[in-house]
Image (cartoon, rainbow, N blue to C red; front, side, top):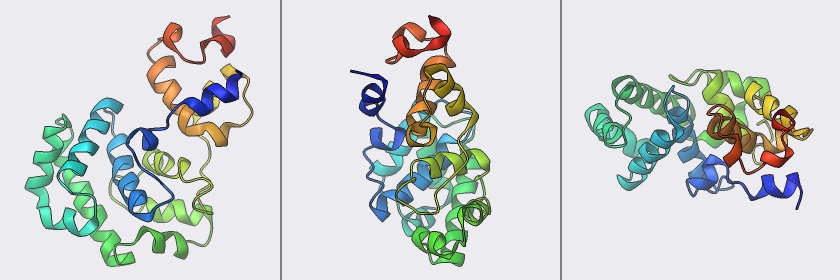
Length: 202
């Protein structure tokens, strides 16, 4: 079994969350999750908090708006998202309201109206809390699903690809970023599933 086989066995964050990004409903859920992942907070807390949104059935624009700020803060806190609970609740509400006002609550319409990949990124960055990091998180897992989802690979993905001697950065970016966050950044080399392919530790 080679490096490509090992990478294909790894789950991206959207896959771990049980999302099927070929389904529009799950693309909105990933949109919400991307906002949570973008903060300077652990991936485990972001995942736990997203699952709390799912448990509370707060995974559509209408349900989120109906819940209101206080309820969103409660859900964020219950997931351990305490440090950024107030600002993130505000960002989520503003983002969903803009999505409703400008695109009738439909991310697919946003993609359709974007003239090209750069315009898509520009439109996404109009949402509160969606800076370059959140846009990359969101779009890198939509490559091959949305035709205009073609973000520039993140520096962390490129770094891991270089360590592995891998040229297919875009294809494996979600998994390369995960390897960086969970192993490279934490110096957990000996537990890394692709350790034997890494040029840095030979």
